Structures are given as C-alpha cells and as structure tokens.
Image 1 (tube, rainbow, N blue to C red):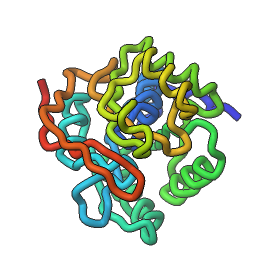
Image 2 (image 1 turned 30 degrees about the vertical axis):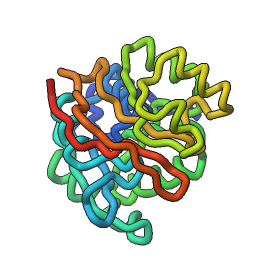
Image 3 (image 1 turned 60 degrees about the vertical axis):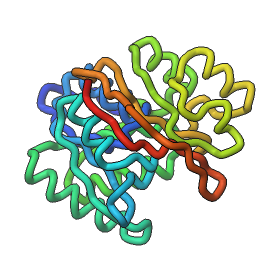
Length: 227
C-alpha cells in the first residue's frame, strides 16, 4: 500500500537516524511539497549517542544545522521507548505545529505498524515515502541524487571492508559480494549522511576512532563541524 502524496498543507516531523533511509524519506517529502518543521532522534539512556546508530548528539546537531532545521531529542531505555516517544511527539506537535510524521522504513511491516501506532497516539498521520520500493533501486537513487552516506557502524566481520567508507557503486558491489543487504535492513550496517541535496553545506568529520563491542564495530566520532 502506497502513501498518498503530501500536499501543500502537509507539515511534518521527520523521525531522524541521521542515516540514508531517513534522509531519502525526508528529501522525498520535500519534493512532494511537504514542509519540514523539526527532526526527531532518540538517544540512549545516557544521552550521549543515538539509540539506533550510535551517533553522538553533537554530530547530529551539526548535521541538522547543515540541513537548516532544528533537531529534538529524548533519552530513553528500550523499556520506556514507546511511552517516551509518544509523549515527546505530542509536545513537539504543539511546539512546531506539524500534522504528519515521516519515517524511512522500507518493507518491515512491524516497523510500519509501530510508527502508525505512535503517530496516531499523538493525532498525527504517518508517511513512509520509501514503502515497498526495491531496496537496491533506492540505494542507486540515493547515489544519483548525490547523497554521501558514510558507514559509521557495522557487524564486526564486515568492518575491514566497509566501515568508514562512503557508499558508492563500488561499495554496493562489496555489499553484494559479502551477502550484505544493500540497504542494511537486517542490521548489517548503519550510516551518517554527510552531504546531499537537502544539505545547505556539507558535514565534515574531522576525527574518529574505531571501536568494537559485542560483535559490532563503529566509528567513535570525536569531532564534526560544518564546512
């Protein structure tokens, strides 16, 4: 089932991981004349890194500034995630006056069900601009648009091949050779978009360290700035 295209009266909050799928969903909503109001990210319970991608708060703030939008956060454990998410959605709706939420999920029905549930709880309509589209086609659309998505975390067995690299056609081939889902939908890898058509200026990653924990490796970004 496809979503109805947003109209000029559509204003939205974008559920924001900082990665390629939320970015492409955001950009598609822009192309359909929807008005972005705020980005929304969930941090871990310590408030230092995003719960989904492990990206530091200050990096996401710098990325949001490059795009030209405010970004809102909550800190949450997995146990309180839904309750905290809905509560913050309601607050943000009042503060920023939007009527839709935008999510970057592609084809996992349980994710869509949850996103529609929490949106409805805040009297909002969920939009999924990428829903049920071909995963590989979406990645190549992203490349054609000039989106630069840096692989910031991945399963440790793939780290030497893909970690710290920007997705391009050659890296897509590496994904295929390693039997990695091209979109990373099974959790094989996560990204941070450092430039693209929704950016007003690129995000520069100045320094990072590579760390590993519980079978996952990631870039521990120490410094990021707006160019």
